[in-house]
Image (cartoon, rainbow, N blue to C red; front, top):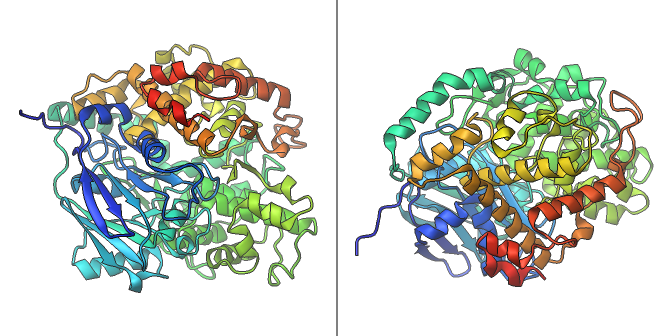
Length: 626
């Protein structure tokens, strides 16, 4: 029987067991790929199917899954991303992070659609993948090295200069619970602690080289779409080129939604010094990009003494600027860029790191920790030098850094007293740099997110508060009218349901949000690459399927609707700035969460119904609902 050639994917998943050094290849059929696509849904599928309930995330029993999507590696903007997932050591639940660069595309070009790593090596190793073949290599000499040092050493060893990498630094080796994986040094699948999972397996890096991508179903259509993006991106996304995500600082300051002083305020007096425009005009030296993308949204910066920041490790994006800037009260791009460099070199999530330090600053301010705990550091808001030194202590798990390396939830439990009031997290994951008191549907999204607070598979209310690109895109889903950003209602639950289902779908494809494909062009991209007659409806259902599988996994691991909450601080009213007097009303919030459950086909306890699982073609997951 002649098997049809797959388009857009290879039909091969690499399986690596580090405990016994075995390597094999699985070959799923087309139905599997069209059901799960890649990324988030694929990760959730294997975690539910192949891990036992209650495992320690840092044990050999956890899986570490590198998961591009079916369009990854196509010569189109946004197709360079990959997902990486497993059980999160930070939350104890579903772990998933997405990152850009070139690694995902290179993995597809090397002949694999995903890599699933299980077990634990006896000594440090790295995985070498070249054109369909894989080897486990000794990495004893790489342990302790930074991400850039590791990449260069492997290039020297293999003689391959165009190798692409997923690497951990010392933070992952030291099992910092929010350590992350770095793609090619400066692209971070940052959240949920996958760097610690990788470190627990003693896997220092995955090094990949491939010379032939999957065949495209309709190469001429792919070229046509590429020409469309070349002709239109400047009119639709020039701001991302000009100032990158850091362009968000100014509008959030103006609207009162710039997280400041551990979410006590939504505006920062020193904001002007840390805007994207200021970075562009002072320390920016280059704009980096990802595979096949013309937008060049990545920042590369240089800062002289005393910070000594080099472009090798990129530059801070919005989340990093806010987390190390306004959040910690630091109005200087120098220490912010230095903290970013340290995080990329050593493999730390900049969001959780900044929030952990801001938490510690408030504890210090209120006498819960002292200079005796900080080794003499004056850990006050605004002290950029102390902030940078604390990043280094977290990497090394030294002193207070060892406490903060556990994440703010566990750190607060250890410090005691009122520390829990200062620990800003959902399900153990620190809040990103977006204010739920400004974006109230986003707050619902933080609460119900399977990974703990997350801003990517979420909705940003301000994009839908007036006529413009956001609401125009939503009209194809039947969402017809703008809504005020600070409204909290069933209408907002519906907005979250629709938008997050589509962003979860993007995390399965795995495709970037920044290239302006929109809901109309994205199905065209999928169809041109795979040959499938994909529709917006199919993608919407894919997003629901991914979110629901992740929900089932969390229920299996002991989470309940009682965990779908926001920090108490977010329910309090801001006392100054443009949003003075605005909080997230607790009763309306819980009503909106229940509305979201119903719209998702989950019962009043947040458990997906058997009928909903069957409707999504994942009835097999019913046994994991608890």
